[in-house]
Image (cartoon, rainbow, N blue to C red):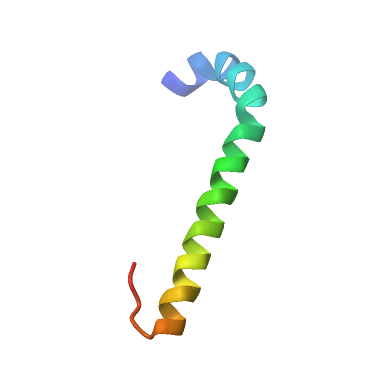
Length: 47
């Protein structure tokens, strides 16, 4: 009920910020992947 009430407002807010959000997610994914690869090369898995 709460989501349906604000869903039009959310879509208008999400569409301009979708690129920025995907850019942040991509950065976090690359950062996590690189840190995982570095920890694998060292031999100590740090999460």
